[in-house]
Length: 206
Image 1 (cartoon, helix red, strand yellow):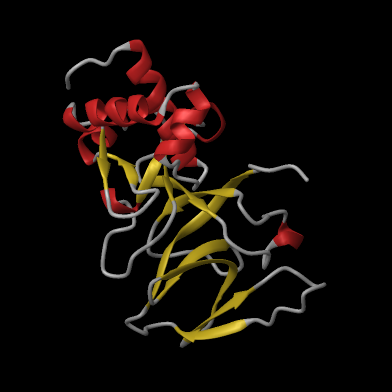
Image 2 (cartoon, one colour; image 1 turned 90 degrees about the vertical axis):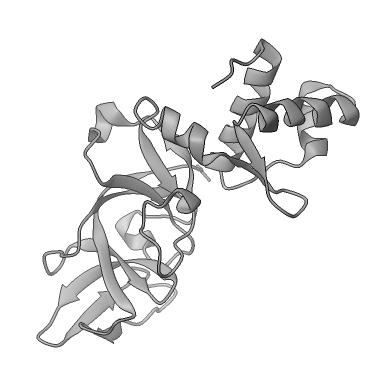
């Protein structure tokens, strides 16, 4: 890929960091962060697009890292961060990947391992908080009683998974909120075990 100027590299790193926080920046926020007029920010973003580092989708905060750039950094930037999971697409498809986080020293770089951003408070008693990144070792099976990721329709849920004869129990961990265990058919076409949770990274301290 065509090399970047120092300023373009700074803009790219800022965009990548904000995407990793699940908070895509607007053009005005980029300008404000670097003390630029909006037209200068527009031009710099245009250079990043023409050089193939970012793509722009519709919407006020539509900047995304390009598949080509993500493919280039995959080998050096650590584990991929999954911000959402779309039904019918592989869990590690490029469109599901927000960015990469280097946590190799803690968890290693095992093929098929990725980070999934947690939404909700259903697992707080297990130390998994809203906004945390859980480290997931991908696989279609899990031992009964382990914390895992299960895909229900187009939603990925983090729960302690218990395998029964013909159904799966998804047990939350938030006694105060009173969430109930959910039971799903084990062989339902809309139910898929994605992998087991092997770690958790706290992203916000309150």
